[in-house]
Length: 488
Image (cartoon, rainbow, N blue to C red; front, side, top):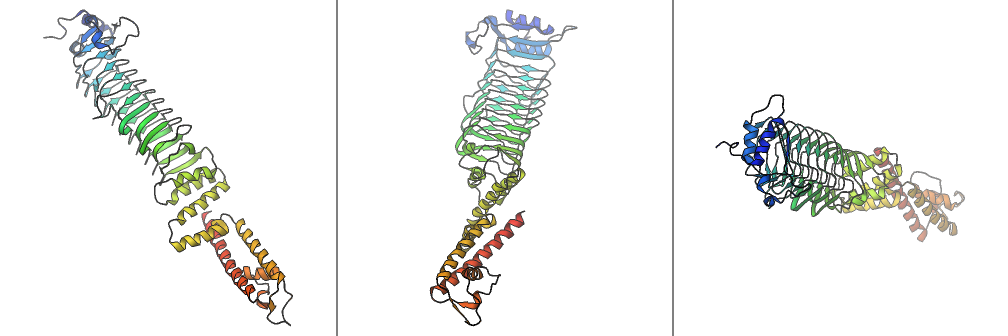
């Protein structure tokens, strides 16, 4: 039987309006809740088969642009447009769908489902020449848009996605291609959202969004490619946010974000290329932060947001903001769950040198040597402690002067109170306790005092101690200076 025969009054209104692209509004009262589908009468009920027949076979009127524009209807049956090519724009707003529409492989001019309630949507490999709108939609089952090609923008402001179980993601946009923006502020997704391999030519806006899942990954956006910014301010994610391998040309804005996945990774942005990453003014991340192997031009990272565990191996960045003292930045390298990796310290060092903060750069170099010391053998660690105590691995040269002056004072006082005897009384110069002490301390310089006098008893043991200390001090100074110069 022809679906356009034996039409109800509601369906007849649609049939007459369609060829001229006129709107048909079935709402009895403004702001009526479309979720109450079973409370709607027959005067607002439309069969999906009638809509399908109109879109595929209804005649057009000369000089008019056909369009299906329905507001506030209950649509019964499956709207089956699988593999169909539809020239007319489709707007089914504030509608209630009893069954899941099947738009698999369809080619549409434009689709608007704003403020409608659907039990799901099957639309993988869908092609839309214009805009796809799901603003204020409530989806009660999986929305399958994998492989979709949308020439314009995708709007999902304030949309809500839920499903009766977690057997599959509630929103699937994997391998989708969007020619403009993905606009979804205040979206609510209770289950996984999948964006793996998707491409967005413009911007992504998920400000104030909520992504929650009972376990695993809340937002899976591996290998995502974005031509503009990703605005994710104030998002709340309960579960992992997965961005591994993504390319974001502009800014990934996570200001005021709350990321939580205790006992696992909360944010993984490893192997990414990002113009700017903003992690500021948000709650402390609950779970690990993984930025391994990523390249970020400008990294804006507040120490207060860092979790107990971070993974930063081979992370590269050009600028690190805001400018913080080295004492506040170094803990993030110490929390790295990886074995000692000098690359992280070199990156932080380069960031401080970039802004001309030489004092902070020296502290980073010192911290690097101390971290490296933990990987050495016992005798290597012992020598490291000596270098650290004497000259701070060459990055605190004034400490050597303090040691030298202290030892010189000890020796000068000790030998000044009790002179050592001369080796040859008739040939010995006048004894000078200061220069005698310097002769013992400085291995290279000779003032003629050490060879002319022979200490005995405790003086002799003090001489041995000063000679050994002098050699150690000289060796650590040379090693430290050599290390410092080689890093310039």
